[in-house]
Every structure is written in C-alpha cells, then in structure tokens.
Amino acid sequence: SQQGEEDPQALSIQEGENATMNCSYKTSINNLQWYRQNSGRGLVHLILIRSNEREKHSGRLRVTLDTSKKSSSLLITASRAADTASYFCATDRLGYSTLTFGKGTMLLVSP
Amino acid sequence: EAGVAQSPRYKIIEKRQSVAFWCNPISGHATLYWYQQILGQGPKLLIQFQNNGVVDDSQLPKDRFSAERLKGVDSTLKIQPAKLEDSAVYLCASSSGYQETQYFGPGTRLLVL
Image 1 (cartoon, rainbow over the protein chains, first blue to last red):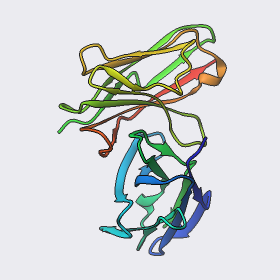
Image 2: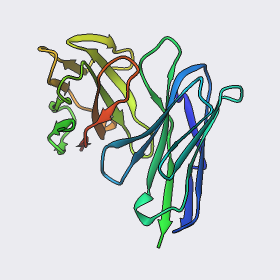
Image 3: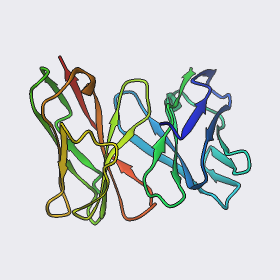
Image 4: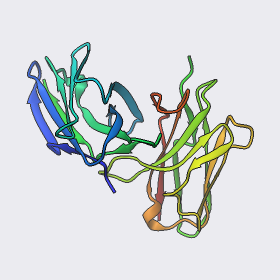
C-alpha cells in the first residue's frame, strides 16, 4: 500500500512561477525524502528532511514537514522548463529502513 | 564518482520467458535495493540487501522473482516465467547504510508481450 500520497497529481505552470507539491503519509516516520524523475530516467534525490526538522532549503527548493499533520510540502521557486518532471515523496517508517513512495506529482513548466 | 549502473536498459520478451537484470552499485555502498515501477505509479520495493544478506523481501513475488548479491557488490534480479503484468521499469538503488540517501540507476524498462 502507498504510504505517501502526493497532491496534486499534475501541475502545469509557466516559467518563473513557483510550484508547490504536497505529500501526506499515514504512519510515524524517521525521514521524508523528495525525488525527481525525468521522463524515461531514474530517480534523482533532491532533499531529505528528518522527523525532528520543520523546514529545509536547497537552492530553489524549500521543503516543510509537519509531523502533527503527517504532511510535507515541496516548493520550487522561479521554475524553469528543465524542472519538468515527476516528483515523488518517499518515507521510511519508524523501525524500518525501506522507503515507501507515493504515486507522484507530474509537473509541466512551459517556456 | 560513478553512479549506479544497470543493464540492459530495455528488454522485450514474451510471456512465460525468463529475463535477468544486472546492477552494479556505487563503490562502497553496502545496501542495495531493487524496485519495480509500473507506469503512472511510484517505485515499489521488491528486495533490499545489506552486503550479501537479504534485509527485506516481503514484497517480492517469490514464485517467479529471485535476486542475489553473492559477493556483496553486484546484484542480479531474475523473473521466471514472466507475466504480462511484470511490464514495468526495474530500478536498482544503493546507499552507504541504513536510512541513508538512496542513489538510483537509470532502470531497465521491461515489456512483456
């Protein structure tokens, strides 16, 4: 079963706009990670946020984590056409080392 | 630093045939994972190795899927016999240890006809 669920399923924006994707999960976690997958390619790790962290930044990426609501958000600022990809959140539950992925958000950034 | 290598990149077979995928993880990474990603879904873990031992294979369909990592480095995933529903991308990932960042290979895209 899916641990994480991303929302929205698809998002279409113009270059320069910000993109926000959300992830909800069901059980307590150690970490939450975000990955990007370009069409026909493997997953690329973007950022990891631990359960005791609330916010993390990496370049144009900002991730928040609210463990009380069991949710996370990924914000991409000043989006570029190259950001077009599917974005997945992945969680590892307390006591487990395996990751469970959501179904992903497909982001389309138009020039 | 070289990434995770996988081969082949694409494979087309007929149902009931056998197929094998190969993965070479990042040098020094003790943990290796095989995932199945069906079109439109997120990756689903099939099996996790720590060195050459299996940590989790609870979602591996053991009647047809098998995997090994004999020397604690390379790994092979086999499907025998394949079914139509096995059509997917098979991703290999590795990490330096427990709960560390996983690095993914490009995947093998399998089509079962």
